[in-house]
Image (tube, rainbow, N blue to C red; front, top):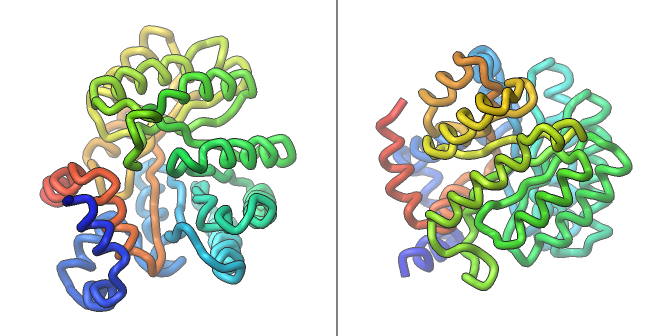
Length: 308
């Protein structure tokens, strides 16, 4: 029921129009969203880089319904990559395929993503393709593999709560892929995903060890461990120490505005840390959908408003 309410709120245009004028709503969102413009995003990345933390930039928006919307999203990514190149800041970009036309056809989406990947290669950075709900997993992996073969500077995201992820990771490790491992935030059926947190956590640790194993790293695979869960971070640090994994051969990733203290501590300890920085005018639906994906995040985000 709570999730349904949050999803309804995310789609309510009247409330969106009202909420963007509410000071407290903008302040809450601004903790996690860099702002609405490219300049806002670049300023946030500059602050992170000054702390020894790199970034991955996401232009907000999902499930576009028209070719024009998909083209505009693509154009925005090209512009922000130009800005990253000109500024010399340390940042990748992350893309959601439904924001680039996946619902309009694989060929449409691939052409748009190829423009972004080509521009990223031109300015000397990478593109990470985000994973969305399970209905898109096979198509997302297919487009990723096609572009990785052609351009090379492309990474992918795998979610530990899916049963299929161990097989997906095993295949990607053989390919020398750059993989961001996250737990997964979409609401999935027990047919596809572990329903219990303990099983999701166990899967995360198992997949982390696969990504950081010596024979896999020798093939060029690089693991990015995306989590704010201290237990998952500690498990990764312990495994990396036991296996003598160089700290420049993996990285931790976190969301902008969440556990800044932990981000800074990890960076100070010599670990590579990358922060996911979303920006754009679609901050309200983004904010509400993130809460709706896992209603437990309401308390998590509320509690983190009082942390550094």
